[in-house]
Image (tube, rainbow, N blue to C red; front, side):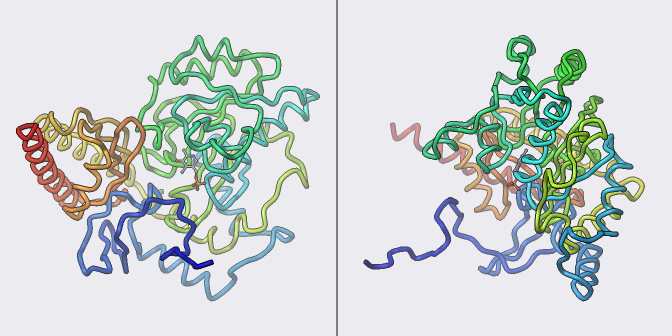
Length: 403
Ligand SMILES: *Cc1c(COP(=O)(O)O)cnc(C)c1O
């Protein structure tokens, strides 16, 4: 048999024909020598941009001391990170994992174990929402519930009941004697930058309180400043019992976390969960450095200011090009542009203008600049979008006359 593949990377990604050598702030240098404005931030990961000096220094310092320690021993820096996350949130306990999906696995396990430890192991089902994305492990895929990701991998894991987003009557109907909790993203990222009104989250909180359910937020994408505060739940004004973090937590170093109140975590005892790499010293050093920067006074005010500026400027481009774009949505610097043309065409046209963006559901293109983006970079991105729209309009008009 001949080895046919040119690449030996498992072909599960439709990769753009581009690679990068280095990055600084919001900019990437391609192997083609070109400079690209990076509004993907590694899909909401590099919240402080590329090679932030404080993160580089923290990781370099840690690299000369200890790379890895097992969880058989104490973790002073992990303790400090957990304490800081708890101080900034509703939580009393933190479990560190290595990715968003793993953080979500812990959220699911905490939610189930809570009821089991109270003598109700039959209460294991979790209500989730259409358009959700919770990860690619078998449990988080089942929670995600999208046939496009589940197909071919056997029966989806049992225990998830999906209802339409924003439909409180459907949630009420789905609650039964075996329901353990409700799981929701404060703002759906992959699903197309969409969220129900704040009143819906308040209604979920009330339903959870009335029925003894845990409310779980997936803040893997929205957490760590992306929506204009450290956690999105603060802006919504509804506090969950359990929450996941990951993407921006390590500023580019893989780390995830599950945060829970003491009550929600009451079922978790020694041996009930674990991870070899979770809370690794390198990951913890990176995350502590991210918090150093984000917790400086004024950091989120600045993010919110940039958000407003970007949204206003994008709205004016939408007004000028109704044949290409129809809507601006989102919070903070998790911004979605709903496209009229296929969103993939828009992402490609923007890439031609050396502006990198990310597609999402509902024909939306995500603008995810690093939170440290400057006004000048926002202006630059909007000019590049304008250029791409002019070209896409011309191409569409040409196609029309040809028909
Ligand atoms: C990215 C994402 C995940 C999965 O994170 P991985 O690190 O890819 O496992 C889960 N939930 C949400 C909301 C996400 O955006």
